[in-house]
Length: 469
Image (cartoon, rainbow, N blue to C red; front, side, top):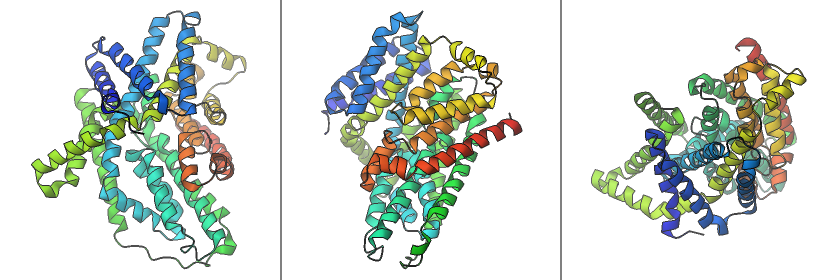
């Protein structure tokens, strides 16, 4: 369902006002952006699903009861609303990159290279490809690769063996899910990093992102080993492998170069304007997307390419912004609830509780990681748990914990939750594409892997704490 043009265009105004507020600090811009975000949600309400509606109702109740739980309800509400419109702005700005990626021949060629791999390389290419393309496409990468997997994994391609087709479905979709799930750890263009840097302002992206990338490699290696160890040995060689098309490495390298250029541009904006990286990304993404779309039409000549790009963005704007209703509602509501809860709970409460049981150091980070994973299984969005947890631990030094390790713990928990909880958007999309239930994709396909990965992350966090922090 496409919402009428004026309603769909409320979100871009939220984005523009929020960016202007963060750049100028002029307060009147903030309440206007709050009101427009509320209007956007009201307009989109009839087309929202059960989960977004439930979160929005809980957010409304949290606002109503706030005066009874906060010493300064006005300040708490402003902080929560500012965070909500910031999340909406983050999604709106990155949606321009998604629009450019969805029409890019380079992205489609990358998808073909990833899918058309021999079994020995298929897991690594699918998991790493889901991560890399997901940096620009976000959750749309699950739709892109999911369609390609279904198209490639036919009964004929499986040599007429239904069992092989079924096993391939499980292995290929599991690789996609696990690769995509590592984005909170390794991608600078995620809401995860933006939220962590907003709650822990003394932390810089370059202090934690390298550890996130290293942890991403560890989890991908585990996933690859798990896939090889659990692959049915009795089916090996029953289907003749297809030859790999030439030129795949060059295609992947060109895509990596594109991602690097966009990230480098954001870093350049960060340094030149002396602003946080997430804000620099929000300023860079629409410009980079416009340039990318224009380059895709370069054969028409520059003036015509620019005109065609403007026309496409205007034509697609209804789909682009109204199609984000569920993502915007869930993330904004979860962020608002988490911020209000964190403001209402005394800042020393969590510290006192940890002190009573004598928890210090890396154990605090491990506890936070486990809470994120476990609570996600019963429907508590990681953004909510991370907001409350990090806000309560906003001075990690009091617990003998470095900000870097605390941030990495939250990123690990978010990754593990996204890869297995049957109520997360990623699992819902992947299970629909695979034709199975969310419980099958989340728990049966990835449950045991997630348990092992969680244990590995516990050891990993303790090891990093001992070696580096």
